[in-house]
Image (cartoon, rainbow, N blue to C red; front, side, top):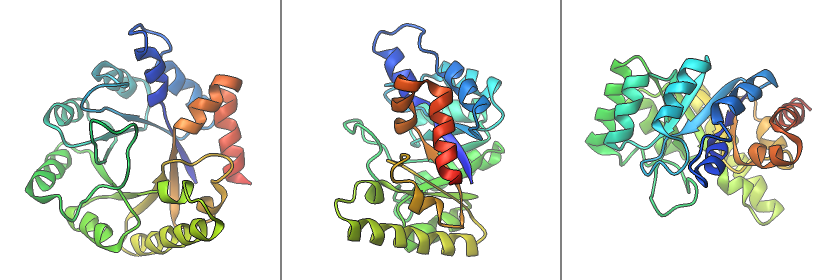
Length: 236
């Protein structure tokens, strides 16, 4: 199972002072040297952390860049110009602290369909960040996504063991269904070394994308050690 490391919150610290340190590109390179398989960066419409220049520099510096984005015109323009290997389409609200749920692909309409078509024309792979829901999965496949990434927030935030098990089962069911459709399966949101085990055990999931817990841990032990800890936990 591959690990994509999201470096958004390295940029969050930098933007608190509007200076050039810490550098998310430098953090990305450390993560890759320490066992990460790809880098994830979310260019938000309000540019609260990752900036346009970061996406350009990341594309030049790393082989596998997964750019998370909503389909706002200014962000789509950057994606089409930079051409990351993959774009993951996510919902986005200006007021939210972090992505709160999966994208409503089934209700996305012409605007979403047009954006996906433009990304495909540019040679960019498209992933849909969705809840573990059969309707959203079918809509993602119909639009031509190559990957679905299941939102694991409900699992990570479950208050009881029963609720956590139910969420894991729902993700496992949809992962099997996605794989049967020929889709690559990824998962992410709220995962850390304490809760990742049940998701790792789902055989159809090929990639986990994890950011906040790794960057948070890196404050104490450094990025290299934080990435190695996560990879080791995934292997175990």
